Amino acid sequence: MTEPGKVEKADKESDIEFKTDSVFSVFEFKIPEKNNSILFKRNLKYQTKRHFYIGCFYVFTVLAGTFYGSNKQKSLPSSETSWFDVTNKSNLINLYIVKNGWFWTSFIFIIIATRVIHANNPLQIAKSVIRWILATLYWYIITQRFFGPSIIDRIFVFTGGRCDNYHSETQVFEAYVCKKGGGRWTGGYDFSGHCFLLIHASLLLWDEISAFTYRPENWEIAKEKKILSFFFVLFLFLWWFMLVMTAVYFHHFSEKLAGTIFGVLYWIFMYYVRANWMICLMPHDLKDLEEYEL
Image (cartoon, rainbow, N blue to C red):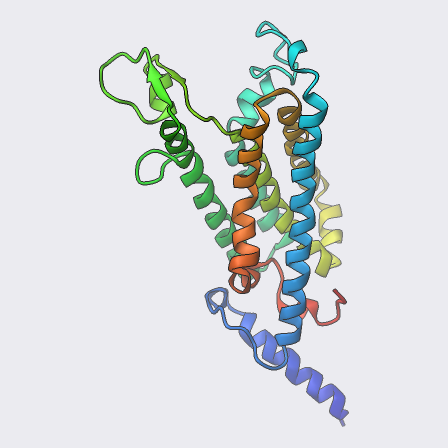
């Protein structure tokens, strides 16, 4: 005969599973009113605090790097510096990895999410894909296109930027078009795209790591797939290292500050303005929190 306490617990678990056993339940953003409400609120508080600390870490990195590099600007290496010198804009890491940073971030994110963290879990994979789509959309409108020129280009032109020495008399409002046509993109406020990209990409990867907090078995999977796990950690470190180099050697403080603000702005919106909605997309189910003390 089953004890009353166990029956209640079983009913509670079945109620939770009913809401999370389908891929399509990811679109049902309903906050449970009884059994799960406390877990939901506890998790919301934990996640917002966690992102606050991580965001502060990257903001501190930019501020500390800028302060440290303030006396080094005069000693910047010339453009003839080796391609392996990270203080040179034309180094190999910057040209082939950071310049295509969102591609590499997306690649490692999707591989890790589907092969390591959420292997054989269609619902969690669907959540990861939605989080990636939202983060990618934000990256796209900031750096690529937003009903025409990107946000970066619009700010540049609005603050007096222009395309000099362009091959035609046509007005150009996009940096890519200007440079491709042999023009010189100059005169405007050029906030640090590197700071934006590196911080935004890192926070996306940190989101995925939160699954390890609730599911100890994920550590065993990570150990089995050491190479994939190694590349995941490597990219997090590489993005942080390149952020340090950007903060120390490149851009003025105001440009780095603006890039940093845009880098954390998406996450501030998602975890503070639309927190109840975003928490439904985190890489765990409420049942993962049932025996976990936040």
